[in-house]
Amino acid sequence: MRITDPAWPAVQEAARMMLREDGDSILAPKDIHDSISELILKMGDAMPSRKTFPGLDSSKNDEIMFFIAGNSTPSFYCGANPPSMNTLWLPFEGTSIWNTLKQSMFNLLDAGYPGCLGCGGTGAEEDWDEGASRTRMNVDITD
Image (cartoon, rainbow, N blue to C red; front, side, top):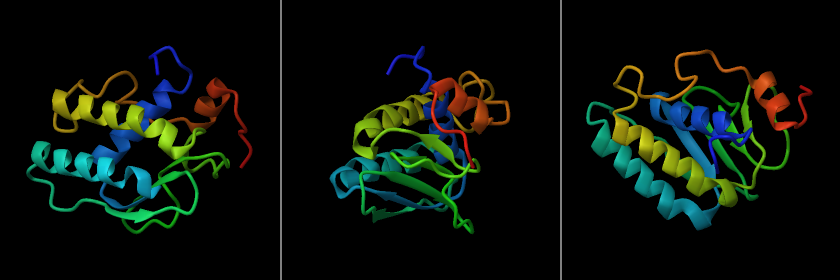
């Protein structure tokens, strides 16, 4: 995915979210579990002070959901069905967007994120606007 793609800011925000938040669980297709486990190991190496990491469970469909501890609504969702406006949505099948999302997280970790200033990329310091993101991607913005 190119940085000019309308979905790029959402990919970057989902990557930052997964790295900075206290993730409780990730639901994803079994096909990508090994790749997600590789990412979690890299997170542990890059963030030695972090004490907890998300658990990994299988999703029923080709979708990825990331849940923050104590929250029953996913923080981000990769899949075909539009979630509520409280969830960052990447309107792609989980297996088709995973490598882009993983590479974005690897790049952020290599830059020192989240323990650095200014290395989170464009929009890292701003509040996320899901409505604007869905408008930019020209997808359903109903709640």
